[in-house]
Length: 260
Image (cartoon, rainbow, N blue to C red; front, side, top):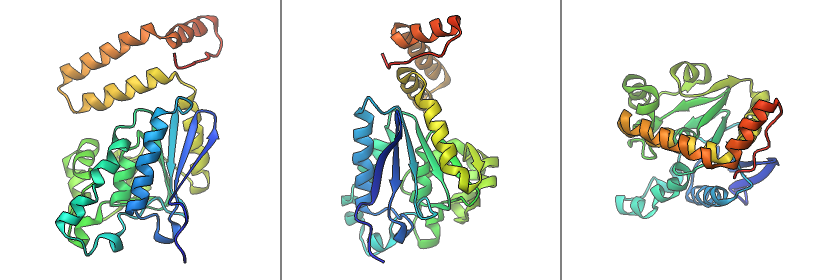
Protein backbone atom coordinates (compact mmCIF):
# COMPACT_ATOMS: atom_id res chain seq x y z
CA UNK A 1 0.00 0.00 0.00
CA UNK A 2 1.37 3.43 -0.93
CA UNK A 3 1.85 6.25 1.53
CA UNK A 4 -0.96 8.84 1.63
CA UNK A 5 -0.03 12.04 -0.17
CA UNK A 6 -0.92 14.33 2.72
CA UNK A 7 -0.28 12.99 6.24
CA UNK A 8 -2.74 15.48 7.78
CA UNK A 9 -6.11 16.59 6.42
CA UNK A 10 -7.66 19.87 7.58
CA UNK A 11 -11.25 20.95 7.06
CA UNK A 12 -13.95 23.14 8.62
CA UNK A 13 -16.99 20.91 9.22
CA UNK A 14 -18.86 23.54 11.29
CA UNK A 15 -18.73 27.28 11.92
CA UNK A 16 -15.91 28.00 14.35
CA UNK A 17 -14.64 24.38 14.27
CA UNK A 18 -11.56 23.08 12.49
CA UNK A 19 -10.92 19.34 12.16
CA UNK A 20 -7.48 17.77 11.86
CA UNK A 21 -7.42 14.18 10.64
CA UNK A 22 -4.28 12.06 10.90
CA UNK A 23 -3.97 10.49 7.45
CA UNK A 24 -1.48 7.64 7.45
CA UNK A 25 -3.93 4.72 7.73
CA UNK A 26 -1.45 2.40 5.99
CA UNK A 27 0.89 2.93 8.99
CA UNK A 28 -1.88 3.11 11.64
CA UNK A 29 -1.26 6.88 11.68
CA UNK A 30 2.19 6.42 13.20
CA UNK A 31 3.86 9.75 13.89
CA UNK A 32 6.71 10.24 11.45
CA UNK A 33 8.56 13.51 10.98
CA UNK A 34 6.33 14.64 8.10
CA UNK A 35 3.19 14.18 10.19
CA UNK A 36 4.72 15.88 13.24
CA UNK A 37 5.75 18.88 11.14
CA UNK A 38 2.29 19.05 9.53
CA UNK A 39 0.66 19.04 12.97
CA UNK A 40 2.96 21.80 14.20
CA UNK A 41 2.22 23.96 11.17
CA UNK A 42 -1.52 23.37 11.40
CA UNK A 43 -1.74 24.21 15.11
CA UNK A 44 0.37 27.35 14.60
CA UNK A 45 -1.94 28.55 11.83
CA UNK A 46 -5.17 27.67 13.64
CA UNK A 47 -4.04 29.45 16.81
CA UNK A 48 -3.84 32.66 14.80
CA UNK A 49 -7.10 32.15 12.88
CA UNK A 50 -9.82 34.21 14.55
CA UNK A 51 -12.54 32.24 12.75
CA UNK A 52 -11.54 29.07 14.60
CA UNK A 53 -12.81 28.70 18.17
CA UNK A 54 -12.35 24.98 18.75
CA UNK A 55 -10.31 22.21 17.10
CA UNK A 56 -11.15 18.52 16.75
CA UNK A 57 -8.29 16.04 16.32
CA UNK A 58 -9.07 12.55 15.06
CA UNK A 59 -7.52 9.55 13.36
CA UNK A 60 -8.45 7.51 10.30
CA UNK A 61 -8.80 3.90 9.30
CA UNK A 62 -10.17 2.87 12.70
CA UNK A 63 -7.04 4.05 14.50
CA UNK A 64 -6.06 7.24 16.29
CA UNK A 65 -2.26 6.86 16.28
CA UNK A 66 -0.24 3.75 17.05
CA UNK A 67 2.83 5.64 18.23
CA UNK A 68 6.03 6.93 16.72
CA UNK A 69 7.08 5.50 13.37
CA UNK A 70 9.58 2.87 14.59
CA UNK A 71 10.88 2.28 11.07
CA UNK A 72 11.99 5.91 10.91
CA UNK A 73 13.87 6.01 14.22
CA UNK A 74 15.05 2.47 14.99
CA UNK A 75 18.54 2.92 13.56
CA UNK A 76 19.20 6.45 14.77
CA UNK A 77 21.77 7.54 17.33
CA UNK A 78 21.23 10.08 20.11
CA UNK A 79 22.52 13.03 18.08
CA UNK A 80 20.29 12.11 15.14
CA UNK A 81 17.24 11.87 17.39
CA UNK A 82 18.15 15.25 18.88
CA UNK A 83 18.38 16.78 15.39
CA UNK A 84 14.81 15.69 14.68
CA UNK A 85 13.82 18.46 17.13
CA UNK A 86 10.63 16.65 18.09
CA UNK A 87 9.98 18.95 21.11
CA UNK A 88 9.71 21.88 18.69
CA UNK A 89 6.96 19.99 16.85
CA UNK A 90 5.07 19.32 20.09
CA UNK A 91 5.36 22.95 21.28
CA UNK A 92 2.59 24.48 19.10
CA UNK A 93 0.22 21.73 20.29
CA UNK A 94 1.16 22.07 23.96
CA UNK A 95 0.87 25.85 23.71
CA UNK A 96 -2.34 25.89 21.65
CA UNK A 97 -4.53 28.53 23.24
CA UNK A 98 -7.95 27.35 22.06
CA UNK A 99 -10.01 24.35 23.19
CA UNK A 100 -8.83 21.08 21.66
CA UNK A 101 -10.88 17.88 21.54
CA UNK A 102 -9.42 14.48 20.64
CA UNK A 103 -11.76 11.84 19.24
CA UNK A 104 -10.05 8.49 19.78
CA UNK A 105 -10.98 5.17 18.21
CA UNK A 106 -8.69 2.18 18.11
CA UNK A 107 -5.07 2.41 19.29
CA UNK A 108 -3.70 5.58 20.89
CA UNK A 109 -0.32 4.24 21.92
CA UNK A 110 3.06 5.76 22.72
CA UNK A 111 3.31 9.08 20.89
CA UNK A 112 -0.33 8.70 19.87
CA UNK A 113 -1.38 8.53 23.51
CA UNK A 114 0.84 11.53 24.25
CA UNK A 115 -0.75 13.42 21.36
CA UNK A 116 -4.22 12.74 22.79
CA UNK A 117 -3.00 13.95 26.20
CA UNK A 118 -2.49 17.42 24.72
CA UNK A 119 -6.26 17.72 24.26
CA UNK A 120 -8.56 19.43 26.73
CA UNK A 121 -11.28 16.81 26.23
CA UNK A 122 -10.87 13.22 25.03
CA UNK A 123 -13.92 11.45 23.65
CA UNK A 124 -13.20 7.75 23.27
CA UNK A 125 -14.93 5.18 21.12
CA UNK A 126 -15.41 1.78 22.72
CA UNK A 127 -12.63 0.37 20.55
CA UNK A 128 -10.09 2.87 21.94
CA UNK A 129 -6.95 1.58 23.64
CA UNK A 130 -4.56 3.88 25.48
CA UNK A 131 -1.03 2.99 26.49
CA UNK A 132 2.64 3.87 26.72
CA UNK A 133 4.41 0.74 25.41
CA UNK A 134 7.81 2.36 24.90
CA UNK A 135 9.49 0.08 27.46
CA UNK A 136 8.63 -2.92 25.28
CA UNK A 137 11.00 -1.64 22.57
CA UNK A 138 13.82 -0.54 24.86
CA UNK A 139 13.05 3.13 25.37
CA UNK A 140 10.71 5.30 27.48
CA UNK A 141 8.08 7.96 26.74
CA UNK A 142 9.57 11.09 25.22
CA UNK A 143 6.55 13.21 24.29
CA UNK A 144 5.38 14.27 27.73
CA UNK A 145 3.74 11.17 29.23
CA UNK A 146 6.02 10.99 32.27
CA UNK A 147 4.70 14.42 33.27
CA UNK A 148 1.16 14.63 31.89
CA UNK A 149 0.09 11.16 32.97
CA UNK A 150 1.40 11.75 36.48
CA UNK A 151 -0.64 14.96 36.71
CA UNK A 152 -3.78 13.46 35.19
CA UNK A 153 -3.82 10.04 36.85
CA UNK A 154 -1.60 10.22 39.91
CA UNK A 155 1.57 8.24 40.52
CA UNK A 156 0.31 4.69 40.83
CA UNK A 157 -1.97 4.52 37.81
CA UNK A 158 0.47 6.45 35.62
CA UNK A 159 3.44 4.32 36.63
CA UNK A 160 1.53 1.10 35.97
CA UNK A 161 0.82 2.22 32.40
CA UNK A 162 4.41 3.30 31.76
CA UNK A 163 6.32 0.54 33.59
CA UNK A 164 4.30 -2.37 32.21
CA UNK A 165 3.69 -0.97 28.74
CA UNK A 166 0.26 -2.60 28.80
CA UNK A 167 -2.67 -0.63 27.32
CA UNK A 168 -6.09 -0.02 28.84
CA UNK A 169 -9.45 0.00 27.10
CA UNK A 170 -11.89 2.88 26.88
CA UNK A 171 -13.94 2.02 29.97
CA UNK A 172 -10.85 1.58 32.16
CA UNK A 173 -9.42 4.83 30.78
CA UNK A 174 -12.66 6.59 31.76
CA UNK A 175 -12.58 5.10 35.26
CA UNK A 176 -9.00 6.26 35.82
CA UNK A 177 -9.68 9.79 34.50
CA UNK A 178 -7.77 9.55 31.24
CA UNK A 179 -10.78 10.35 29.01
CA UNK A 180 -13.80 12.63 29.29
CA UNK A 181 -16.45 10.22 28.05
CA UNK A 182 -16.96 6.97 26.12
CA UNK A 183 -19.39 6.46 23.26
CA UNK A 184 -20.02 3.80 20.62
CA UNK A 185 -17.58 3.98 17.74
CA UNK A 186 -20.26 4.82 15.19
CA UNK A 187 -21.30 7.84 17.30
CA UNK A 188 -17.77 9.02 18.12
CA UNK A 189 -17.19 11.72 15.57
CA UNK A 190 -20.74 13.07 15.74
CA UNK A 191 -20.47 13.37 19.52
CA UNK A 192 -17.05 15.03 19.32
CA UNK A 193 -18.33 17.48 16.70
CA UNK A 194 -21.36 18.28 18.85
CA UNK A 195 -19.08 19.10 21.78
CA UNK A 196 -16.86 21.19 19.50
CA UNK A 197 -19.87 23.12 18.21
CA UNK A 198 -21.10 23.75 21.76
CA UNK A 199 -17.68 25.02 22.86
CA UNK A 200 -17.34 27.13 19.69
CA UNK A 201 -20.60 28.86 20.62
CA UNK A 202 -19.06 30.13 23.87
CA UNK A 203 -17.16 33.46 24.13
CA UNK A 204 -13.68 32.94 22.63
CA UNK A 205 -11.82 35.24 25.01
CA UNK A 206 -13.31 33.53 28.05
CA UNK A 207 -12.40 30.12 26.63
CA UNK A 208 -8.79 31.08 26.00
CA UNK A 209 -8.29 32.77 29.38
CA UNK A 210 -9.96 29.83 31.15
CA UNK A 211 -7.62 27.35 29.45
CA UNK A 212 -4.60 29.54 30.14
CA UNK A 213 -5.39 29.86 33.84
CA UNK A 214 -6.21 26.18 34.27
CA UNK A 215 -3.05 24.90 32.57
CA UNK A 216 -0.69 27.48 34.06
CA UNK A 217 -2.20 27.03 37.50
CA UNK A 218 -1.69 23.26 37.36
CA UNK A 219 2.08 23.85 37.41
CA UNK A 220 1.98 26.56 40.09
CA UNK A 221 1.29 26.76 43.84
CA UNK A 222 -2.41 27.04 44.70
CA UNK A 223 -2.14 30.71 45.68
CA UNK A 224 -0.53 31.56 42.34
CA UNK A 225 -3.14 29.60 40.40
CA UNK A 226 -5.94 31.36 42.25
CA UNK A 227 -4.39 34.74 41.52
CA UNK A 228 -4.12 33.89 37.80
CA UNK A 229 -7.76 32.81 37.80
CA UNK A 230 -8.92 35.99 39.52
CA UNK A 231 -7.00 38.32 37.20
CA UNK A 232 -8.38 36.55 34.13
CA UNK A 233 -11.90 36.70 35.61
CA UNK A 234 -11.58 40.44 36.20
CA UNK A 235 -10.12 41.07 32.74
CA UNK A 236 -13.19 39.58 31.09
CA UNK A 237 -15.34 42.39 32.49
CA UNK A 238 -13.73 44.66 29.89
CA UNK A 239 -14.98 42.43 27.04
CA UNK A 240 -18.01 43.04 24.87
CA UNK A 241 -18.88 39.36 25.20
CA UNK A 242 -19.26 39.70 28.98
CA UNK A 243 -21.77 42.53 28.50
CA UNK A 244 -23.60 40.60 25.80
CA UNK A 245 -23.66 37.38 27.82
CA UNK A 246 -25.08 38.96 30.95
CA UNK A 247 -27.57 41.10 29.05
CA UNK A 248 -28.75 38.04 27.13
CA UNK A 249 -29.16 36.14 30.40
CA UNK A 250 -31.26 38.96 31.87
CA UNK A 251 -33.34 39.18 28.68
CA UNK A 252 -33.75 35.40 28.46
CA UNK A 253 -32.34 35.12 24.94
CA UNK A 254 -29.41 33.33 23.36
CA UNK A 255 -26.20 35.41 23.45
CA UNK A 256 -24.33 36.34 20.28
CA UNK A 257 -20.64 36.24 21.11
CA UNK A 258 -18.22 38.02 18.79
CA UNK A 259 -14.89 37.42 20.47
CA UNK A 260 -14.52 41.05 21.53
